[in-house]
Amino acid sequence: MNDPAEIRAALESARTIAVVGCSPNPDRPSHDIARYLMAAGYRVVPVNPGHREILGQPCYRNLSEIPPDVALDIVDVFRRSSEVAPTAREAVARGVGFFFMQQGVVDPGSARLLEEAGIPVAMDRCIAVEHGRLGLSRTRNSSAPMSVPNFCPGRDPA
Image 1: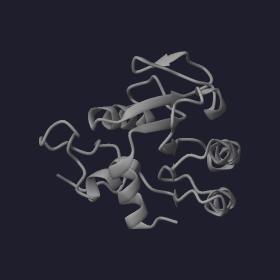
Image 2: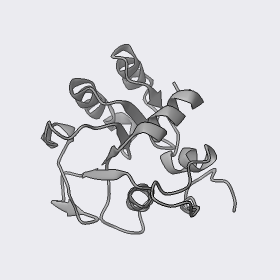
Image 3: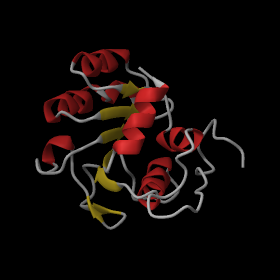
Image 4: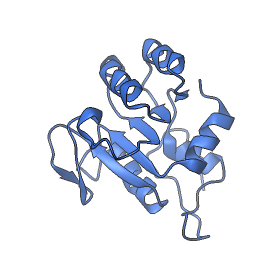
């Protein structure tokens, strides 16, 4: 868990990231990080049961509703720690490549379940901070640097 080499490998190879708990509200961290990930060149699949579309993308109620032909390389979770387990079980069933629990989200039981299924885990980590910390803060189509969203706790000051 929280292995820097696994986090780097996941972020370098990923194409599609499901953002569970993605908000349509631009003032929410999940919305800003989803935008950041899109700007970095990832395909973002929003997951939020209350919405049909977020950031111009179809939004799904849970991971199980995402069409099976959509390979989920990373699942990034913005949910209460107590609500991670169902998403972790869905991630195992789908065979996702990597599972991020955002800063403040801690569920050791789900982490064990995922790792036993061969899915690496980052727990209590901000995907945008990790992306920038690893020097990946450039878009896939440009050498222009990106800045990590301001609200990310622990972010590197510019």
